Picture 1 (cartoon, chains in turn brown, blue):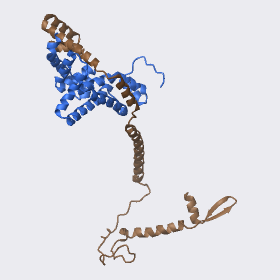
Picture 2: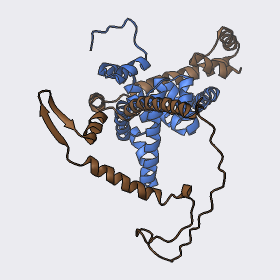
Picture 3: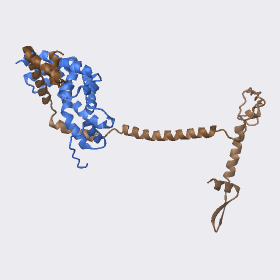
Picture 4: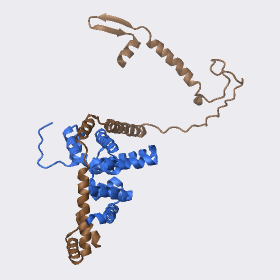
Length: 198
Length: 183
């Protein structure tokens, strides 16, 4: 360590006991070291004085404090943290449901028989219509399509639609309401199913 | 707002946590501890009182607004990171918006306005002559009282680098002012 490093270290408060002793020896031995030490001492004194002069005016100090206290905190961080907790809880719940559902769905049943292998591979569906450019939504005028009964995707939903609409009609039929001493009671099979479902 | 009378002064970080919980007295205490140092830094970095006052206000308004962003670590390092960024932005804006001759005159305004005696004026000029990479650690160390570790955090450099730069800044300053310091 040079003498100047020891001197600056002294004013920074960085010297240990051995280094402080080394500095004392250097100052005792060399007038140049002493001059340098005095220069740094003056410099530090000047820096402290300068720092002490840089003071904000009193009106500014009170004005800034008022402005800072009147400033609301940004709520974004709060919202994020609160949302994070909710998200973690929801995510954990969803994970439990997913894992549980997967386990139940994939658990092999003891009574279930193995699914029989298809005897014949489903025939390929020919999609080429016999009548070109005929709108396929028109009932009864569908082009002839050669297909397997098990692969009739375009036909099944249509039938389902009919069934569903029938069911809807039966549900929306007016219900009979009779009143006896025990209070109102629904009658009819539709009514019983409906009330059981509730 | 209980009658809390601590036996020992609370650490800056504890006060900041109190402020985050809504205790305004904690913020007032922090403000009293740091307002002079923040102002000194702004003055030293910007060299213009009016601009320094603007940044000074912006710093504490921002501290209040972003109080929840303070998570852990040294409050002083966090505070002076904000001060430093605002000052650097202000310097960049000033350079962009002013013609060169105006920018030079602005840096001299503080000297004209301040009631510095001759030796302090020489010191100020000496500090301005330091390269920025030496000047800033020196200001943070001497005018703001930050530790080497805190300066390293603010300036995002290693502690030994900070030590060397502070040392070299003082060495250079002593060389520049040597003819006047011996009087």
